[in-house]
Length: 227
Ligand SMILES: Nc1nc2c(ncn2[C@@H]2O[C@H](COP(=O)(O)OP(=O)(O)O)[C@@H](O)[C@H]2O)c(=O)[nH]1
Ligand SMILES: [Mg+2]
Image 1 (cartoon, rainbow, N blue to C red):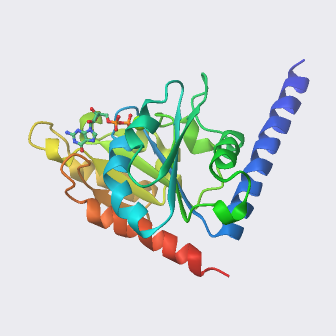
Image 2 (tube, protein in one colour; image 1 turned 90 degrees about the horizontal axis):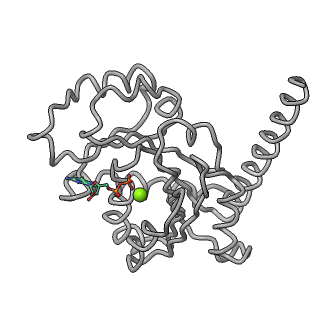
């Protein structure tokens, strides 16, 4: 019966919200700053982490949870950059859930709060829709686009851009080859979420990377100072 279906769905989402709340409390107690990096497949999420990890992991104990439907390729790419990287395979699901993040966290820390990293970077499954709806207990969702996707995505996927604390526009090195209306892109972001921090960068050439790394580092420092 339809009424039964609605009731079950409500209970499932409630359990998910509660798990996200427990994660948030654990991250707060440990002083772990958590980023949920969300963007379409191929926008360069793993490339951004590859480029950022050496500088961040030098400053802070850093770990990465990488979500994909299948394969451990992204975690393999991220290995050897100073941060432990754990692959989370959703086996069909189009987003990471708080319970899967809990599994990754247990693998990283054995449940011991003293072993929590100062910085936890979560690469969500490549998707501009579903990951926006799931709280993972993070401090900041980051919305990522690439020039190759076209400039019209913010207003097509407003929920993600609305929730994002920062918006990253990647593959700026391809600006000469790809017609991309940057003013149009950023004007949409401004309408949806004028307070979001904005970054234009190239994970390939590292142009613009310093500002992004400084923003992440500032988040870690701020979280550490909280009582
Ligand atoms: N030219 C260029 N290519 C990039 C850049 N960032 C990522 N790529 C390439 O885009 C493809 C997808 O990158 P990947 O990091 O796997 O994207 P993900 O699916 O979002 O994790 C790879 O071939 C990368 O080498 C960039 O800034 N410039
Ligand atoms: Mg990836």
